[in-house]
Image (cartoon, helix red, strand yellow):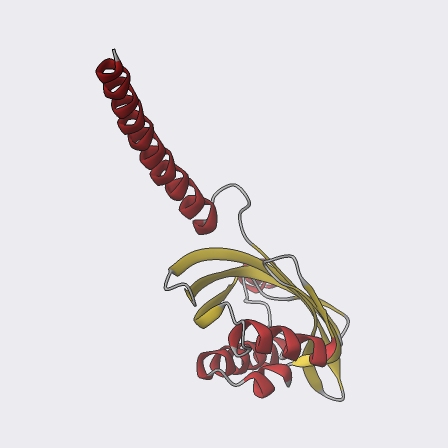
Length: 187
């Protein structure tokens, strides 16, 4: 009987660490705060000494650094982003190292409404180091990145170069035609 039940026992599902539900709550709470534009609540999910590397390669250190970055990008007099949305997907369960450290990674679908009137949609990749301090999981490090070779900003720049090139070509043809007529009339 013992030999017959061994294959069944081997197929029993592994028990998931309860930390994963706590980490899901962190993810869901942070996404809700982002959706509502609540910067102070967003910061509550970050460790006081957090380091964030943003998609524009800027680095913010500490909650105050993150607050300053978000205020400058979203609310300041020279703000760049009018509004944004982000839907985060985790690729797999957080890799736990002991009971107080984890590394998670995944993708996000981003939508930005820029102050220029342009809207940008793109997929980004991210990774985060999480630590549990005083019974609460916090993001200690967050790194976000986009595809350097295929992204909406590059596509807009390419499109603009085609438009500018076309306008310059037409202007050159028109100028050549006018100069040719002028030369002909001078003879």
